[in-house]
Image 1 (cartoon, rainbow, N blue to C red):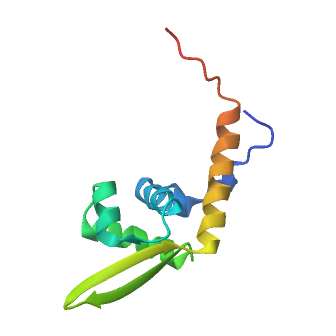
Image 2: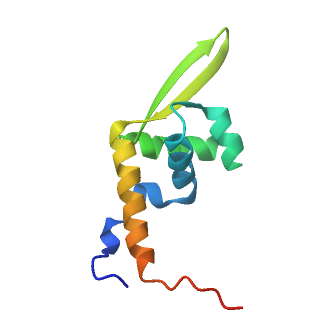
Length: 106
């Protein structure tokens, strides 16, 4: 294991499977609708809402709720703080995996 790796560098807010999925999805998009993310991550409204709230509380995503006609529309985007946190998270995971041999046994 890399001597420079520190497990405390792994951001627990991002590390959950669905929150990591949200961050990865949003990192490639300027903005995404709630239903797009829900479909991509194959999750429920309630489950996604809980994870989005946690990311919002950390300041990693901004959530905008509006109406189109009478239909609610929720759009989510990464904040600058979220983008930096996601890059830091990826760097920390990279350090973790540096010392792992990448050869597969036949």
